[in-house]
Image (tube, rainbow, N blue to C red; front, side, top):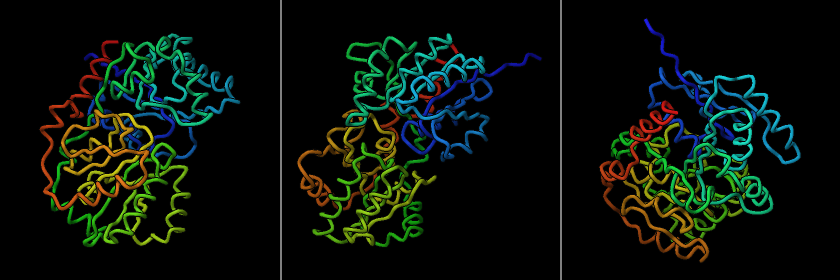
Length: 365
C-alpha cells in the first residue's frame, strides 16, 4: 500500500491566543484534510497561548523564537536561519505577523523556501515603533513568493496599490454562530446578565483596539441610561490599565472582563450590540462572526468597509468624540435577530470554501 506523506506548513504568529488571524488559521486547520496537510507554528512568546493545546491534539508542532526588538536584529535573523536549516521539511512558510514579515521572507529566500506574506491589517502600530516596522517591511512585495490579504485595503497597505496579491476571505464556521434563542437564554443566565442591555466587545487589549475610548463611550452612556452592561472578552498588555480606568470611574458593576474564552459563538448569542471602535483594522473575523449571529454591529469608520456584509453594520466616526456612538447605541431598540448564513456564505465567508481553496493552493506549490 502506498503511504501518502502529508506536507507541513509553518505558520508564523506572535502568539497563539484568540486573535482574529489566529482564529482564522485555526478554523482552516480544523477544516483541512490533515492526512494531506499539517500545520506547525512559530510563536514569539514563552507564555502558552490559548490555542496551543488544540494545535498539539491536531498533530501540530510549536516552535518558539525570541521576539524581534530591533536590538537583537542579527540574533533574530540567525534564529530563523538555524530553524530553517534544521527543519528542511518546511518548504512553505506562511507569515501572519506583519511587524516582522519582511525578515521572515528574507530568511525564506536565503534558505530557498516558499515564503507567503499575509496582511491582516491596514496599518502598523502608531508611533516610532510603527515607523520602524514600516521601514523594515518596505520591500516585502518583492521579497515574498506569494502574497495574501484579508481584504483589498489590507493588501494595498502591505504590498502597495496595483501589486499582485490574493484576497483570502476570513471564513467562519457558519453553523456555530447562527442565532439560537435557547443558547442566548442559557448564556445570559450563566453570566447573570438579567434584563440588562448588553454591549459586547471581543478583541486583544492593545492600542489598536482603542479600549480607553470604548470605556469613555460606555461611561457617558451610563449617564444617559444605567441599564446597560459592557462585556469584554480578550487578553493583552493593556488589560490591567483598562481595568484600573473602569475602577477609577466607579463603573465596575456595569462592566465585565471575561478574559480569553472558548465560547465566543455562544457569547454573541447573549449580547445585544457588538461594538468595535478600533483605530485601524483589516477585515476583522469578529465582525463576520457577529453578523453571523444576527447582531447589530457598531464599527469605527476606520475599519475596512468590506466588513459590512449585511445591513446589520453601521460605521461610526472615530474622531468626533463619544456623541455619535451614544446616539447610535441609544437608537438601537429591540430588534429581531435574523438568520444571515445565506448572505454570508454567498459573500464567500464560509470556512469550508476558504479551507478548500487554501488546501489546493498549498498542494500545488
